[in-house]
Image (cartoon, rainbow, N blue to C red; front, side, top):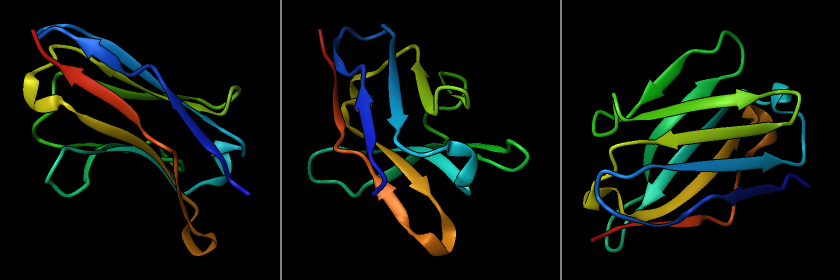
Length: 117
């Protein structure tokens, strides 16, 4: 059973920063990709950032480019999302995702990020 545990969410003022962490119960080297998604109230879940395991190719949503950075620590089986310059429209529940191809896709329980003054 794959478990993904997110942490690091919270309330922050506009312009502030947060770092989300996703600790995996498996070796992240065994995944096809790891990513962060978010879902705001009344909206569909959307990709924020992802990193391909083999080669390290990274993708960002246009709305977060230049502000968010995804990184990974394979020794700790942890993926991070550094979020700078936060805006109220970044408010959402953020989910960690592990894609293992034929072996399935897994989600964490989510962590709330609220950007408000």
